Length: 206
Image 1 (spheres, rainbow, N blue to C red):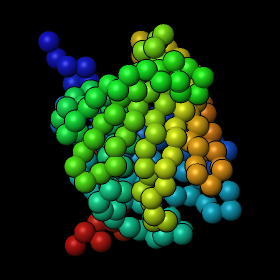
Image 2: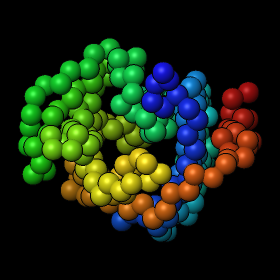
Image 3: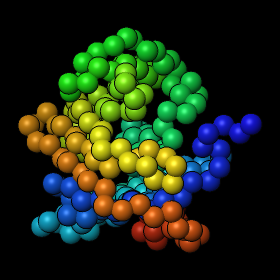
């Protein structure tokens, strides 16, 4: 029997957040590759493009210009592109351990700590009553450096036989929260060009 996630999964996800006016995320999962394309529109800044074609993580915005991401930033983009992040954890991390029960934002939850050499551990929380993933604590890497963040995941709804979270809240150490609400999910066929590197990124790879 095939493992869950072995078949190709395609989805368009449109979301709105307290920070981003509109975001369109496109995912593709195949047995051998994870890909993601992301377009966000931010008030006062404009459009920002992000992507991961299975090998190269990149971004392009008015603030940064075209840029190929390396190291931990690239790894985090690859993680974001994984629409089945809890499958084959033993292949993605050096160690994975359930460390017991803990109260997470008012919910009784199992805590699962995933570690990889040279990287900060990631702790995921799963509700005891439902088994659903309800949150994550991790170290986020950006151009501004490292910061500890907490992500709360909620509002699960049935979508084509799958339970998909429609709301997430990212708590930042500066006291700011970013709340994202999913507006729609569309599992239409994707054109082959969806995940191709933009010309500006191709130039940087030469």
